[in-house]
Image 1 (cartoon, rainbow, N blue to C red):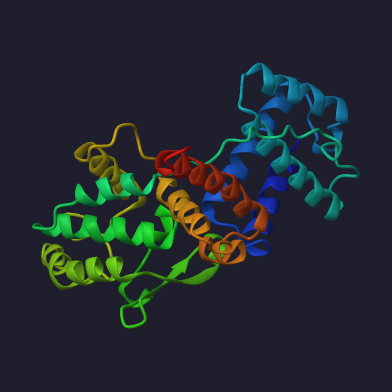
Image 2 (spheres, helix red, strand yellow):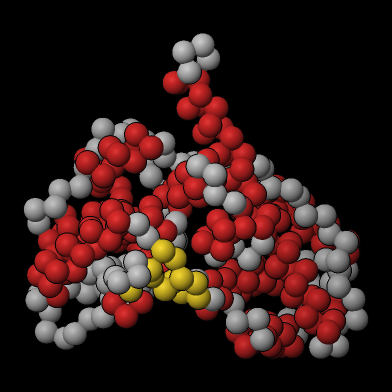
Length: 301
């Protein structure tokens, strides 16, 4: 294969890092999807990036469907390659974008899963606060539900990001975007108890200083994976059945706000969504939430 093929990928990755300021996680996805297409080019004996035609794109789409990939996955791969070739056209490395006319399948519309208020109560009751880890877990759960932040954002919070006087936290979101999110009295009290007691106890288990808010049992930074394991354990200890996924508390936060009268623009800002369309899905969820509440509590439902 022409060495310029790999050079084009290197240039594109630099463009994503420097000009687009994409996260490392997003860049890895781009790199993986484009590298997979390069393997397809080798299978099809396409040696130059400029030799890729629309017919090759059609064959590649057929290959993806034959692999029984989800529509969302196929859409991501095609969108990635479309951006890649658009960049190459801009840099005059190729003449045309063969993915420009490629059909991107619409993703299946699945409503986000969330907890009802009584389910959240069961989760909170599963938190013991007698131990340092219990105090941490209660503060963690309260903050996630109070702010709707992503698990990955929560693991990155440092002590300096927390303003206990104003009850706000500075969150570092996707693409290095920052936003301030307020939290309520329940989260404030749980955080204060954890900071004054549990965190100090956990921090004493290591010699080097650590500025992260949430610590593991060794006094180091609590990772996203660690947070997920804690949430799984809380589900097991509660009266709830089923599994919890990382975004479920985020979905619950947005759904409960909209169901109780919050406007969508405010929820968009709190969630850190770049586009309002990303937030609009919660209007359908909150309508379902209101319908269930009505059917449960109205005497003539």
